[in-house]
Structures are given as structure tokens and as C-alpha cells.
Amino acid sequence: MKRLTDHLIVISFDCLSSLDLPLLQSLPNFQRLLHQGALVEKVDTIYPSVTYPCHATIVTGNYPNRHGIINNTLLQPGRVSPDWHWYRSSIKGTTIYDEAKKAGLTTAALLWPVTGKANIDYNLPEIFPNRPWQHQILVSLSCGTPRYQWDLNKRFGYLRKGLNQPELDDFVLESTIHTIKTKKPNLLLVHFTDLDTQRHNHGFSSKEASVAIHRHNDRLGRIIAALKESRIYENSTLVVLGDHSALDENKALHLNVLFRDNGLITTNTRGKISAWKAYCKSCDGSAYIYINDHSKFSKEVFQKVKNILDSLLADPDAGIEKVLTNQEAEAMGADPDCSFMLEAMRGYFFLDDHLGEYMKTITAKDTAADKKYTLACHGYSPKKENYDTIFMASGKGIRQNFRLHSFRLVDEGPTLARLLGVHLGNTDGKVIEDLLTI
Image 1 (cartoon, rainbow, N blue to C red):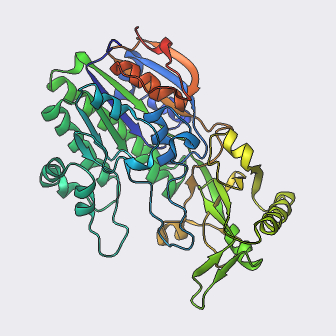
Image 2: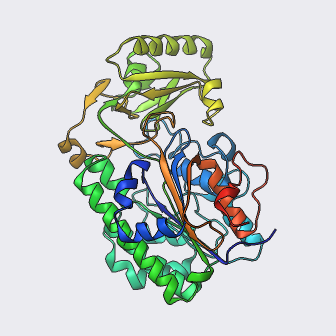
Image 3: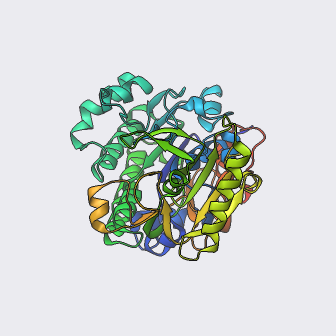
């Protein structure tokens, strides 16, 4: 298959929304990209629309029920900070970076989700220490490319303040520019989270979110300049995309409190979970309900859970918009192993907590004191109104001044693979040839 580009640079601006388009059109570097290339105004995300499943979909062209990354975090009932799907081994099937590597192309990734221990030439995976004895740099080094990471940390580590934003994205930007100039990879995947953080902490349309988009415009300009300085701009394709949008909310729902009250979750004298028959696993704006298959009373538990959910669904103030069956969730591409899936109303989101009250109203003070509380989040159904993300591309292999109203997040992987002249196999998505100069 003929390659359409020599260098494919994929920039993920986490939480970039189709509603941001008017602002993007007013900013010089986004404006340049839009005028010179192609735009998809509305991209239908996946379910649940959270970061790790979305990024696994982008590189595989498949929905979560096929690639296996069905949530950001693992099902670990009672754990205060569950582990994330950090490792490439969690993804079922192939990825665009695997196929690029097989084709003899040079690959690089900076904080791209689910790339821990992936076969990528220059890899700084997104991972953080989740045990008291772990250290950020050592965890990253052990799961990526050690010499490459060590060099980046020596050069630009002073920019970081842990995982705080915008400092983390400032570090990623300088690392991206250095990688372009010194490695000139055929495939470069970069994940920026500044905008997502600001929307979580301050709200979707907050001043802080707008300022983050302006920072992204500056970052985009620096990346374009680096491609030109490296003399690979004319033979490159630059893709800018989002993974999901976000919705404002101020009420947290704790289904596990109800499960505990109804004897479905057992706690010890310190309030920690010691056993469970049913568990609500948050995906922010949606949630999975799991029933412990090892329970002798699984049918009885199923009915008990269903009665609780039916009662909540009938209450207009309970915050539940929809209850999906296992089959309905799987049909939307979500986890086929869940017993139910819940969709929150606008203004509500789910947490895993099993102590306290069923519902908590969130304030700015709560978000400042505890990172689990947010003022905007994602995870909602792609069918929610005004909840689309966006895709834009410019450069070699891309039609100029082309507009497409919509496509799906699953279509991005096959289309990006086509630019590199590789194939992802039988995927849920398809190559959008209208975008390409085939």
C-alpha cells in the first residue's frame, strides 16, 4: 500500500470540543491549519467517552468492547486510587504504532495513553506512581525508552511540577520539539491534557479553559515551526484532534452507598470494603454496574440491583437518565461483562465512594480540596447533544480547504493508518478517503 506521507504527527488536545471551533478559527495557528487542510466539524466519540478508551480507539479503529480498554481505571473495589490501563498489553489486537514499526518506520510517543512497555522507538508513556514506594521518573523509565526519557528529563525536567498543568504540557511541548528535531519520526503521537484539566477544575466555558486553548494555539505554532526548522514540514502531515468533549456538573452520585445500605457491599470496622456482591464502577458521566459472579445468590443480587435502579430511574431528582442492559451497553461498544450501564443526567456524574450520602453537591471548594470532585467531566453517551469532539489535518496526503460535517472516532485509526501506508485489519472504523489525496 502506497504511503501518502513521510511524517505523521498526531496531536491530541484532550477534551477539545466541536463547540471550541469558533475560538479555534480566531487563533492564528489553528486558523492556518484549518485554511490549509481538512476539518471534520463533529466527531462522534465512544462509550464510555473517557480518555484511555478514546485513545485506544484512535490507534486501533475499534470500540472498547473490541480493543479491551473499557474504562480509564481497573475494577478494584474499595481501592482509593485504582490502577489505570497504563500498559500496551491491555489492548487487544494491533495498533497504528505496531503496524508502523512492522513496516520499518520510526515511531515516537509522548504521554500517549496505554503505551506502557509498548514497542515504540522513543516512548515516554503516560503513567504515574500509584504506590507509596514508587517515584514518577523511575516508573516512567521502566515502562518506556530509558535513555530517551532520561535525556528529556535532563533537558526539560525543570519545567515540570509533578502532574500539575500547564507545566506538564510545557514539558511535553519541549520534548515534542526536541524529538522532531533530533529523531524525525515517521509517526509521532503526542497527548496534551492542559485543557482537560482546566475544564475539570473550573468548568467547560471557564476563563481558565479559554486560556488553555490559547496556550494550545501557541504550542501548535511551536510544533509547526519545529517541523519547518527540521526541513520535514513539506513531507509531513499534521493532525490535531480531540478525544471527547465535557459537560458541566455539580452533583456527584454514589451508587455504592445504596449497595452498602442494601447489603450488597460489606465493610470492615474501618469502613473498608471486605466483600461485594454488586459494585458501581464510575466512568464519570456514566457508570458500569458489576455483579460478582462468584456469589451463590447472583440471580437474587441481579434482581435486587435492578429494583434499586428502577427506583432511581423513576425518581426525577435521582440524576439517572438511562439504565442500559448488558446487551444495550455492548451494542454501544462498552464493556460486555457489565450487568448494567448507567447514564447520568446533565449536571450529574458518578463516583465509586461507598460511604456517606447517595448524592453530594459539588462546589469550587470541593474541587480545590479533593481532586475526585470536578466542575465538568466526560464519560457521557456520544448521543448527548452538543457533545462532539473535532478533527483537523493539514499537509501531505490531506485535501486542502476541505470540510466534512461528521465522522466517528473509530474512523480516525484506519484513516491515519492509510496515510502511513499500513493497515489495521478488520476494524469497526473505516478509511475516510474523502479527506485524503489518494
